[in-house]
Each structure stands twice: as structure tokens, then as C-alpha cells.
Image (cartoon, rainbow, N blue to C red):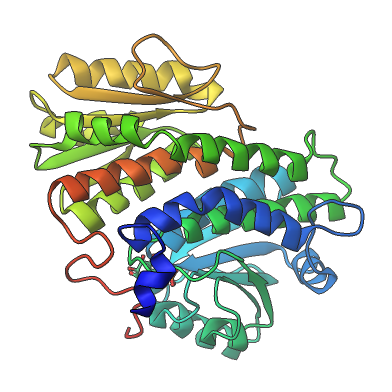
Length: 362
Ligand code: G6P
């Protein structure tokens, strides 16, 4: 049938979509490249952001996790205060709004009802809105003042992979563009760095056997798993744990390395798998001492580090990329580890139980 044709030689959509990520990043660069060969965004959007004093990102699920990385990019690269909110909580835990807020809705489908409810509400209050979505003409895109497209191509598998990396890439372009607009000199060329990221992703999707073995070694007979990281790695750990939960049904939690000792470390016993991400130089020492703490309690630790920060015994070394962009590469092996763990358990990776691709009810 038609779906077999679209899948090509792939056994399922999820693997195909994971593999497409280097091409998606290259496509985004092309789509956002201006006549000077630099990635940039539409002037109207630049203007709307320049006129606002604070950005409020609203999203759900994987898109929320992309928003957390986006906040770091926006604040670190362009100095714009940014908050990130779970769409379904927004009206109950309503943040105090600044004078001139701009709302950014991140949504692969552009159809998530919880996000739409916030959009309708803030529009009534008269605030400016921007939707970052994969689907041109989607509800959130039509109803917002502005849209930035992800150019990831249709994402069919329920667990989001290429949309997440596309969201982070577009958010990096947005952050760099705002910085440029404010006359802040970035100390790197984002267009070039995204090209390096695409190559690093391509190298990682070629390591399937290694990742399949990691899944077997760490996740075969476990009922739970932990992901720890600090700084931006923490946000990638939240997404990595969600991927594993969604498709393999292994109970998984992402934690900030330093927070583990305040409770969760009680769950570590002999053989508990703990994945640690180490891509950030300024926290490399401290995340590695967190690994020692869990290993001392019997954990089976799998360290994934960035080239240059790697140490002997690390399970996987990620090709070096700019340190603001590491989530784009560190998430790829995590997606594949979750994928293989699910396959090894005989799960339907494309259509996990109880989940919908887009949740159109509040
Ligand atoms: C559902 C999907 C998730 C997705 C979330 C938000 O729960 O199963 O994969 O992250 O919705 O979807 P959106 O389309 O708004 O990004």
C-alpha cells in the first residue's frame, strides 16, 4: 500500500525519520539562507521580537523539550529573557506577564489542543504570537500572527524525532538572528556550524550496530532507566527519557545531575541503567562525579560524551560540534537506543499503545 512505498526499504517510519535528520538540518539551512548565504529570519518576525521584552514559549511533549533548549539558545545567544511553559498548565500556573510579551508556540503538528487554547487566550489579551511548526496551514499556524516552518517533511511515527531536531535548529536560527539584529557579534558562524552538525548526525546514524548493542547491554532486562545531565544536557535527558518511555514502556526519568542525590538516587540499585550525557565543558567534572555516585551504588552507567571531553571507558563519543548546538547531536544516539530497546522488546515503535500523534482534545 501507499505507506509501504513511503517507507521505502525501512521497516518502520521511526527509523526512517531518525535517519532523515542530517538531510533535514541541511534543508533548514537552505530554507533560511539569505542572499548573503547566512541563515536569517523574516524581517516582520525580527521586528515583532525586537518590540517585545520577553518571550513565552508554550508547547507540549517533545516540543516542550525543544522549547527548553530554545530558551537557553535565546537567552545565551541573544540575551532575550525567555520562559517555557507546558501548554496544559498555562492557565492554572499563569505566569506574570511582562509589558510586551511575545508568545511562541512550538508544535510539530500545529494542532495540539492545549497549545491552541493558550493561543486563543493570549490573542484575546491582544498579544503577538509566533508559531513554529512542521505543518504549513495548520491551526496554530493560521491563527498566529507569524509562522516559522520546520521543513522536516511529514513525521508519521508517533514518537517525535526529526521534528525535535528541526525545532532546535530553527530556534538556533531565531536566536542568532535576534542577536544580529541587536548588533551583538556571535563568535561563530551558525550557517557553517549547522553544516558541521548535519555531518555529525550522519556519522551517528551510521553507528546503528553500536547503539543496538548499547540498548541490549543496558536495557534488555530492566524495568527502569535514568538519564542524567547538567546544563543543556539535562534538557536532552528529559527528551531521551520520554523517547524510551513512549516506545519501549520502560519507566525512564531524566534528571539534573546535581538533583539526583535529593531523592532519586534512592532508586539506584545493582544493575540499574544510568545514561549520562557529557557534552558541556563547564560541567564535565561535576557530571562525572554524579556518575561515580551512582556507580558506587551499583548502577550500570553508560556515558555518552562529546569529542574533546571524552574519557576512557565512555560508551560513545559524539563528533565535536559547537557547544550551543550539542542537543542536535546528543539526542540522535538516545533516539536510536530507545528505538532498539523497543524493537528488542517486540514493541510497535511507530504506534505505541495509548498515544496519539497529535492530541486534539484538551
Ligand atoms: C503528542 C505526541 C508527541 C508530541 C506532542 C506535542 O503527545 O505523541 O510526540 O510531542 O503531542 O505535539 P505537537 O504536534 O504539538 O508538537
